[in-house]
Image 1: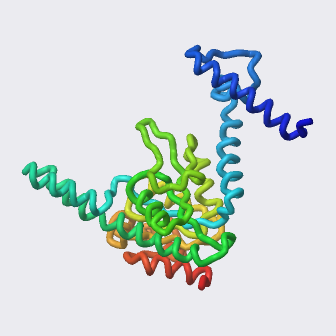
Image 2: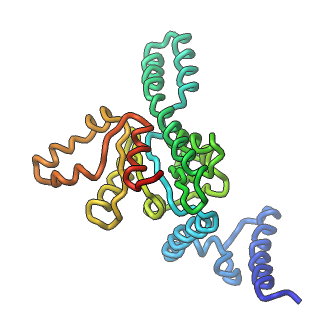
Image 3: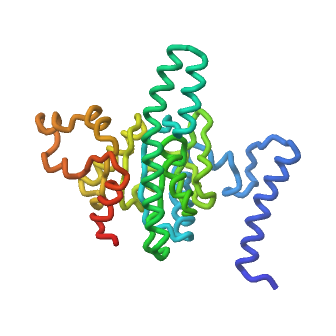
Amino acid sequence: MQNTQDLKDSRLANAWAELQHHANEGNPLEADAYRLAFADPEFLLRRETRGLRMQLEMLKPELEMQAQGIESTVVVFGSARFAAPEDALKAQQAAMKSGDAKAIELAAQKLHNAQYYDQARQFARLVAGYGARKPEKDRLYICTGGGPGIMEAANRGAHDLGALTVGLNIALPHEQSANPYVSPSANFKFHYFALRKMHFMMRAKALVAFPGGMGTLDELFEVLTLVQTRKAKPVPIILFGTDYWKRLVNFDVMIEEGTISKEDLALFTYTDDPQVAWDTIKAFYQLT
């Protein structure tokens, strides 16, 4: 006789199998009052069930990461537009061949910014190298938004050493999929930015922000605000790319205008060196 758990699993599987068969037959999926609530996409996508969807989006990555022993992460943010050095070089060669002045200018910018891709990859290797020498419970895992650019570079650096690497991707109006260096078992997709950012912070032991755009700024200032207001424990917050960040955000003006305290400058540090970024994290936690 089947045990109780087997019977439950069987019934759940049958509910989804019914939906799959419906789709395979090419029948339109229409609202059906008799369908089990949890297996009714039309019901789950109603405005009134948004709270349920948010709970599920909170719970699924939480349970999956717990099961894999992912307790501590180093979160890496940065531009999705920065290319790998080898790709940037190819783009420059193609632009030079075309003779198009605008293309040449854009290719030169892409090649310049490719340094950040390489540095993010180097930094992630340092984190993964530390983890490789430690038991699972003491490891730090690289976690990114799972997309291209700096995110890909960091996932790639950890992947270079065979480390498990996390990607918290987001569904966007334009098609986006996870970069190929995110571990399949830790590759999560979100609809809600708020839930995604919560998962970034839940396990983050450090944040390293490379040059980036609106999304990077959104994520960076959310973390700064949480730490400043003591809604989150202090963690190392590293702004990688001193010239970029100091030109982009003039924190001294905020101090002069009284919108932040001088002590708030201690919430983050600047660096241009992957090793220094890693040493900052190690010193904060006294890692050996």
